[in-house]
Image (cartoon, rainbow, N blue to C red; front, side):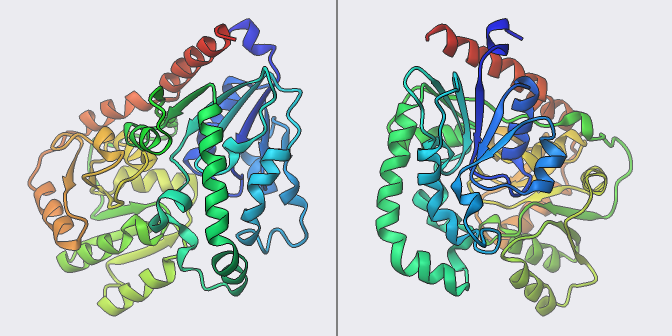
Length: 382
């Protein structure tokens, strides 16, 4: 590592640390590259922090200390922007924000460099159909946010979001899909692409016999297209395992009951890392039915296991899936199009070795090398 970088006071800023996903993996790898870095976030789950960030100091904005925060977490999200804007950051030489929300609004002192790793422009502002809480039935949420604050807050947040993105020294998107969104939303053309790191070493390729089921792995939200996977497999009489939880779980459970396919479609909830890896290695193929995915870590993980991917022809999948070689696409976002893709896939010969080779482009090593190059360039221009 560059000697000067190792001496810097560095803050890595996260929207929140309450669940582990692609953003948290990126932050974890950044902490491995920059072990002296402190993490700044709005709220944290102490067990998650203890497991994944045991050697890094984690500092919270005032939101963490509001009474009943754990029970009113969704309602208190309205405090995130001001929490980041007021947080004391004078001691830091370098701030790295990893965000699809408010973290980029962190106060950046004069002379401090700000590197923004953009996961996507905030969905709740620019992509309302992607808001997980859009259909929430919580009374407090609807009164505090939906009914009273939504319109004025969105106008304020949009202004803060655009200002903070334009002021960052450099902005890197996690895919070409997100790069295009950033250019369109912020009118900023100097946006690079830094693909997120995938822990390939934790995944075991399978070049031999596989199970008799398809797999969906990810959050169960309406915009993720889980219903398409359920209906397609139900109609074809295929077995499907669904790993994950989310706000759309109750509705998906009802659909499975109504279709009478409980014997073929298994809701597994959260599973251990070993079960996750085993299912990725042993399934026939991963179903990735989300439309306009930002990047999509799971399809790359599937390929790393030698597993083909059946994905919607949009978003990050266009960059990570090679049609006919590491998976197949379906064009229309509906059940029939997915059914056609599954039928086409079953007639296509895909070599697991091609899948594994494709995944190597997204290794931790590739991420680390490019990130350090970015960092050195930023510091040389200081």
